[in-house]
Image 1 (cartoon, rainbow, N blue to C red):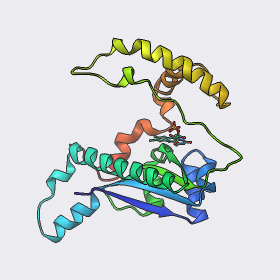
Image 2 (image 1 turned 60 degrees about the vertical axis):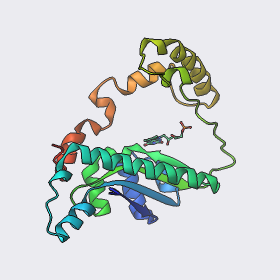
Image 3 (image 1 turned 90 degrees about the vertical axis):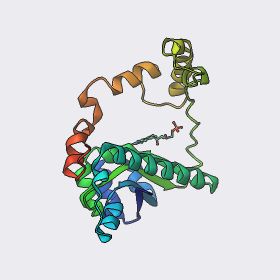
Image 4 (image 1 turned 180 degrees about the horizontal axis):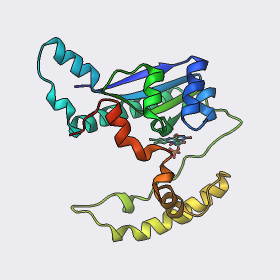
Length: 209
Ligand SMILES: Cc1cc2nc3c(=O)[nH]c(=O)nc-3n(C[C@H](O)[C@H](O)[C@H](O)COP(=O)(O)O)c2cc1C
């Protein structure tokens, strides 16, 4: 069904406005190309209307999840392609801080939602960044059935790895990965406005039944 779209932004004025809506993240202003990845149910709705057919199925949460998955898969393929060409990227989840305002800037019709942004540009060789270590395989790979407490040892190992990484990369992170990540989910206030996403999606025309 291809329930995704992408808006490519090069205009400095539009990038500036979107940077403001994303907590003034400088990389949005600096990047030559800013891509906005959309969960797009408007196209299929439009196509069905053209055929004078019912499109009631689009109002269900399932179709929204499908559209989010489509947009994320497309974006990550673009990231891999961009990196193969020597470009660098930064995902911008903060595009969900103010979904309705972002929709206005992009002139989105109802039933289209900006899942995230993606800065595309050339990495500065003067500011090399190491690849962020990921959770070790025993934490994320389960065989036959899922195990939760079995992950504790791998998480403890990862915490030590990340503490050293934060210090090495001079990142402004206090504590280890567990502590840092727990802070990020501690309260609604930690979600930078995204705690009202349900309401925002309703305003954008998603029924999510
Ligand atoms: C879905 C998603 C949203 C993100 N949102 C932001 C953001 O708003 N601002 C930011 O600076 N980094 C954000 N990041 C993190 C950067 O893109 C990060 O630098 C990137 O993931 C590379 O780091 P890595 O080495 O951990 O992959 C986000 C990452 C993901 C996957």
